[in-house]
Image: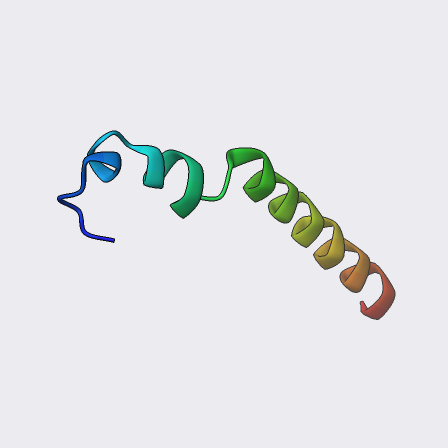
Length: 44
């Protein structure tokens, strides 16, 4: 898709397709932190 297309300029591709939602990123961060703490507790 070209950046010159009308729907790209409306922001549809950025808001709905290209970016991952903030809630998903927050969930990844929480899971990663929990995994690091668990690994540290088990190994350290």
